[in-house]
Image (cartoon, rainbow, N blue to C red; front, side, top):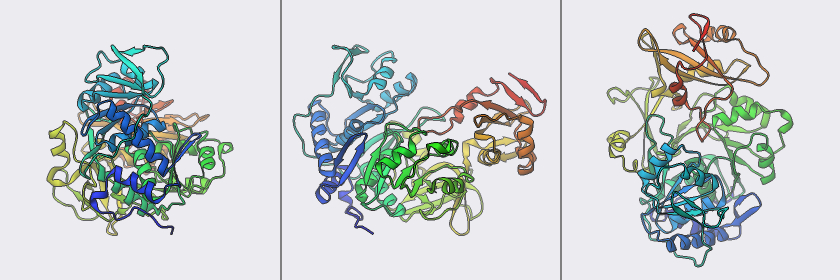
Length: 530
């Protein structure tokens, strides 16, 4: 294996500035970053970060200040996230597609006074009633009209770099970024991500996925979420290069992967299904050996491997945690999250009383680590939510899993997604995996709707493959032999496109909100109701 430069560093060196500096010192001329036609070596990227650090410093940004960033994927977004960390500030990257209430909440919660935005982000910011805490707006793109303003604030282009600055003295425990979760059960929570958490993501993933300086890590995922942001850090730590696309395009995916020489990529379960449903004519021979693809339905793993030659690796990690559980990169075990990654203690408990459960018994997954600051430090401005999530110094994931006797973990469901029907607990994942076996189904979500008898009924929203006509009775006949009677869906809703979050996950919160206010087929009455 080619030497990896940044493993097993002293804790004091586990900060973003230290990682960037080491990469520039040890591999100054090796390619680090590429997007579109632009590419940079480690030394070039360090100069860019030092320069943008000067821009932030000249804008009055100091240690601990929060800097909001509202933009899609672009090199300048990554540059500014890194520059904020360089000067000891806290980056707050946000999804430019947030609704006005969501954006208002994030800006109020973070208290950011400086906003950096692209055109889409500026349009979203303009939909607010007032600028919240924001006092200054800088645009990644020159405003279309001289003297443009938004919410009475002038919009200025980001100033040209006039000086480079030295890195601030930051500790591994200091917060580098606040990353907002999707907020499916309430207002989105700003996760406090320390510098060292990014280092441990880079180190753990490098070791588990066996990255070397010969690898090319390719992502189409958004940089305002932990997956893509940490993929860059993995490249920094491992000596690999990182390629980021503007967005995910199923029709261009294999061509883009081939063009950049990708050896590893990052997918979400929804993206796997989309790629499998694309015509074979879009496939381009490539060099991708594996992909991190959490939440992929089990049946798709061997199909993806056979069709595209790529091994899909399941794992457990979240914005609050790290790579805590993962399938070895060269193994294929559909339906399993994997085994504990060294440095992590993963426990299964009874969520009702907190007691540890024996192997083979389903319960809630709890995580802690002996790697200092490998986990997030809480939720910004939400002390009650922080105490609840980190109860007894374990992070409570809210996921229902089972650990087998051989140490392998199997994901069952989100605890909040368990459906309670006629005295029985039903796994929405089990229902979904069964419905997905039907050859005409492209995607599905199972969720609870209120029952007139009390408790809940099972409703499924089904996205049918192009050109397929599917009768609901046929679908019920297909799933009945494979599900217990109480788990067979009562209601079926056919959707052209399932609602999804920014990272491609089906939004069950939106589906539950719709509830019965949709055209749906009722198995008990065999009539459509509204």
